[in-house]
Length: 332
Image 1 (cartoon, rainbow, N blue to C red):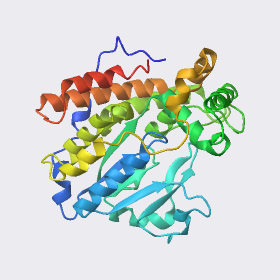
Image 2: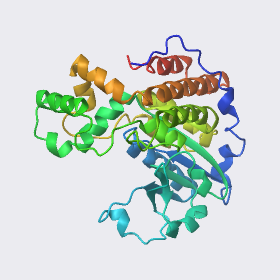
Image 3: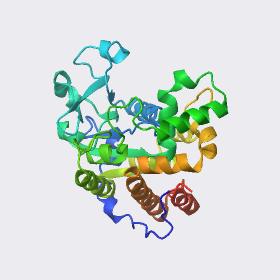
Image 4: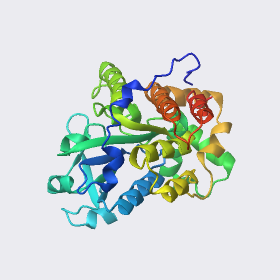
């Protein structure tokens, strides 16, 4: 697992330029002069966060849209092609960049808050100022959570031992039911310059190395808030400080902090992870090798943002919360 014990955390200056003075007044600005982009990465608390940004937009009288894929027959595929409720994305170009369908590109300027499975670079479709926010999660926990969700029909009738064995088999056989091996969702989504899953003939190791470096640069310089699911109350407070500095919508943020995870039935990744054999954990770490450096650097950025908020007098955060956030970064 990653080790950040010897890391020198960022001092926060690299992200301070994103916190421009007009964002805190966005709710009162009519019409809003910038768009908030919540870049949701799969299995990092997306449902809770999408609802948070939707409710904030509603309270401010702003327009909100979710963004993501539009599977044939799903509810979003039945909406009018030019709707402003759900922006359908498709993979385009060499890196399968999540791109709005042509029928909706004209309505993007009408949306004030967008949350969904976009990648960094989505702002090229926006015709006004923009601010990115994202939330990360321990790569191992995220991967196993995703696996359990995708295989929920298979595992729903299993007991814990059977689920552990099934997850172990899936991790140890990464090519099973996949046309291309997993390479890394964090460098893919946070760089916009690589594919999450790809064969060596599609994507070179050098391209992946460059995508990791670019993702880290974006985290430092392109995101106003970088949160961690493992320190969710800190993410909420940093977002509140950015969007609602005078706390006019205090109940919204207080209620959001009480949410730790979506309600679920059955066995969760937290039940499975402690029981995975060492060889399976080693295989998993190898699978997510490109995710780790991006996640660890995201932790450092989030830590720096937390410390900067405390130093500036934020009464809703304490320095110990920042230290606890940093302590989760290694995954140990």
